[in-house]
Length: 151
Image (cartoon, rainbow, N blue to C red; front, top):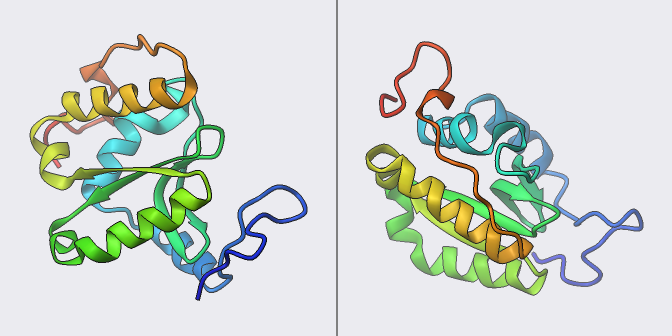
């Protein structure tokens, strides 16, 4: 089921299946360890200058991290996504028809090279915004009590 016919509400928001609202709330309450690491280290509190939402329902999908201003979706993909490549490609194409660009980052990249993940996200934000993002990667941004690479 697609929501392509007029996918924007009267208030300018993207439409989504109402059944996804509760699932998105549950996903926000129980993030994966890698999603939590990306959120707390890179995307939380507009650190890169743009607001991101976690587990945002759009159309018939739930986006891991979404910036409405940039129309940018950041997906953190675990091992199950290797088997769903066709599904993910179709999903990305549907979102692209709404003007939303999806970037995919593997769990392994988050765990093994968080600084490279930071640089990739920063680069995509620069492309989408037309601004040069010069914010440095700070290893001290990890939540209290957790080392940056320990999850």
